[in-house]
Image 1 (cartoon, one colour):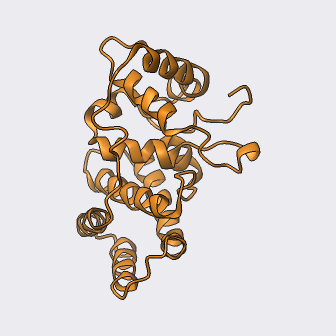
Image 2 (cartoon, one colour; image 1 turned 45 degrees about the horizontal axis):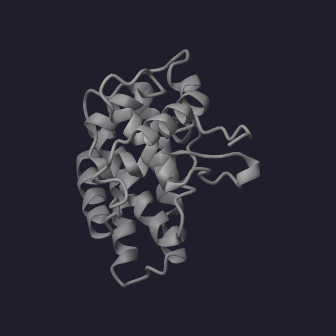
Length: 208
């Protein structure tokens, strides 16, 4: 934790850089995370209230994830006969700008490969987790999420943790936190560290 890992790039780094999902762990889990992120981003993209700057960033990330999804599925050993057609259908809907239909198809595919969030739900909010989560947030996250432009390109992580479905928020932590070259750009945090972050975001009265 002493090295600067660039972990303030929670969900926002992937929005700004349009990088594919990384750092989720085993190939099967990486695929589940990637599918959940595509579905979650598709939902936000299809919402009329989503501002243009975020809509553009979401489109880039979805495009990137769709481009690497076939490779992720192969690495995970999921190459059943229905997979190519499902992936092609997603890409066609997205390319055609049929956002509502794309969001529905993405959610169905994610539901067929559900991300296991048993470690994060139910989540015990303990003093140790609050202390650890506060330390991680202040060192690696708040620089971006409370800095200039926060709210437009750096979402409020406390609001996200409290409003989004737990599976969706956990997927953002697993697939949206990137390290640096010392970690191979993989997520540098353990599940326990991310559970501590989530506990901190959910704690009543937690200071940003």
